[in-house]
Length: 446
Image (cartoon, rainbow, N blue to C red; front, side, top):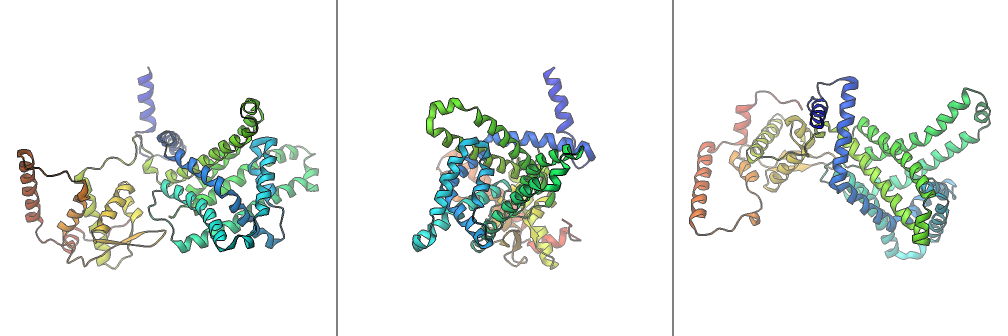
């Protein structure tokens, strides 16, 4: 019976093609696939390990980050914005959070940039940038982005986050407090059904604010182009999960008397570490949701990407170079790596690996920062098809097995040499231009 249920479930969820599904059926299949893929990703341990690394970096960078971020608010005449923001974030720790907030606020207020000197300011900036950069690295890993932001973009865009972030948080907190203390809202709350509606809206406001914040994070932080709807989907997932987890963790912290009895004054520190880990894990999981919503082809039952054979690798390399060469001949815009993967219908990991090999062989050149495009590095008339195949067939020479002068080695090497000579004779001096001219009569549409 269990096997029959499992087979029926797989037939309903994994066998249908999402491109053919419509409406609620497509949403339901996507939701179930997404849940299973997320469970598999967390079990693999990569996301959890990155969340643990972010906890360590947060402990080192928290005070410098808050000191720089909230010093920006002094220009707006707001000097007491730090405590409400910390209280909102650490509210799940319960009454014990006030002790941590007092310590952090005291540390921040004692940071005097003028006394630190040049080396101290550099170290202060490095600790702040390291935290934001680690968040970007985690998002880039999830989005399979191999090229981080340039140094200039890191400085300007990270600075904008430090300026805009506290202002947005403060504005949201002020708006919530103003609405709750408004006399008109207070009067309407005494009249039904406005009272119940305002109560529900008040409960939903934190979910909405956190969802908006996570949506902005997922759209901005990965060094690639993120569509609005996937970023919104991941933001809503993370915002709802974070607010729900904060309520649950607050209940857990309120009933953690056993931990207080065992760890004494260290109990609040342990709860802080656990809450930081949960928060970063939710952030990375929501980022994974936004990635999977934009790349639904990776919602597969088996681990992604699938194993690629040597023959398929050569086929993808020749198809890529043919498409790139045709666009180059027609003076069309260069192809993006992600667009190439979508057009060929293959895993982006495979395309990136092949592009890396072709770039290393001086066949392709990459351009761009957030959106990477590829162009031929040589004249396509002088670029031979055999050169392309050699670039993807030959790996690192250090990985080759040592050659021995015995019967098996001699026989295998002879057959390999015959195969290589046969390929060289078959392709001859065929250039990329000749392959493009013979194989494509009109440009592909990606």
